[in-house]
Image 1 (cartoon, one colour):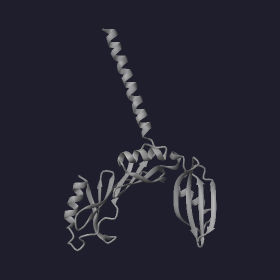
Image 2 (tube, helix red, strand yellow; image 1 turned 180 degrees about the vertical axis):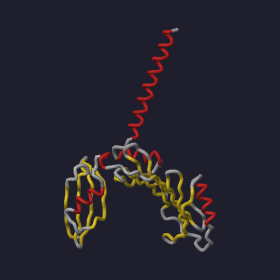
Image 3 (cartoon, rainbow, N blue to C red; image 1 turned 90 degrees about the horizontal axis):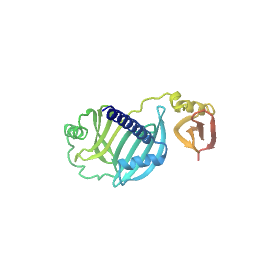
Image 4 (cartoon, rainbow, N blue to C red; image 1 turned 90 degrees about the vertical axis):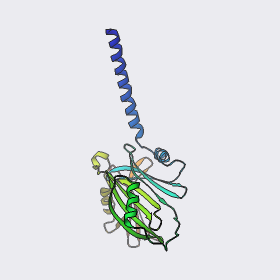
Length: 244
């Protein structure tokens, strides 16, 4: 009986170790460390789509992968957190929606609200506005459910859903935790070389495996391109040229 109990205990311990190990492997596998990994995850979410753009960015000190895809008449945009592969943003919009029946009467706001609440069950409506977009009358409606914020667009005449998007706000992470200096610090470093310039773009990227902030600035007839090492703050590249 004692031998049997020992075997059961040993088996239980082994199963526990295997489960923990598998959990660790699974968690590790969710991390995104390359564009190919981000592409694979996006195509799993939107099967048979064509990836049109891959990019990385820093949001509140958090590294994210952005993937844009095309499938039939829809453009998709997905955003993943690199540290754990969590999907932070998902959305699609209809390309070149048919501009027909615009002489019809608009559906009521309550009718569109009902459709939106059916689309996102349990959500609370934040706002609804009637707008013209590329000659098409649309209802733009914003909703909230838990940590997600939704934005939907409907053809105001037919009630057809044209755009759908939700996002989770990325919580701010200190530069000390990520090891990066942060976009604001990178901007100030770039401006130290051209104090009267205006920053028009800041992007996080990797250049030959080195994490950098790419900063574009303008000053009168001049354009600046600056690369700042994301960890050390050292200026790697500084170019000034006349805007053609």
